[in-house]
Image 1 (cartoon, rainbow, N blue to C red):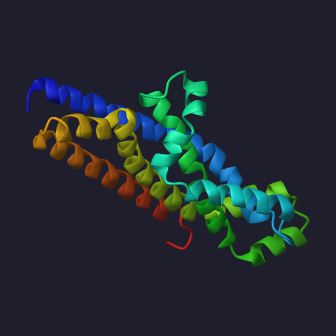
Image 2 (tube, rainbow, N blue to C red):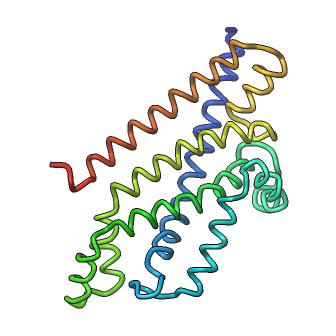
Length: 219
């Protein structure tokens, strides 16, 4: 492979990592509190808002049900409004973030619901306020599950970041399509696939290691 192709490969790898990092960070900031709300706002829960919970749940489900490639096209006006363009790395982070938020919210909701209710009842019996229950009990107890979910979200984002290459999103997917497919350069396509596999393996291994370290059930 020529030095020019290697340079393109390096630039595309950086773009993919940037997209995944920015979208994953923004989606975590929005998805974690959204997941906490979904887990704690049902009837009889810590912060009961059942009507609002149903509405938010419907929106989350609708977003998750929308195929990613359709979501990318459907929110082009929003992407242009936020980034000034609909192509490139910055533009691609918008649909990536919106696709990851509901996924992370459901993951956090599931992890929080798995926390032993006996701990919550004991804390409430001792007069703990909702904020204290969340920060002192729920999040520490659910952190391993949340990390596993965030790892899965990051892996999904890597796949989605390759998909946005089909609509000019940049990154490894764009490089694979333009050079590997359209210009019939199998060595470039192979290099793109191998880099994506390595990135996913690093994310998965790192996430699992961190989750094991945070899991209180491990000695």
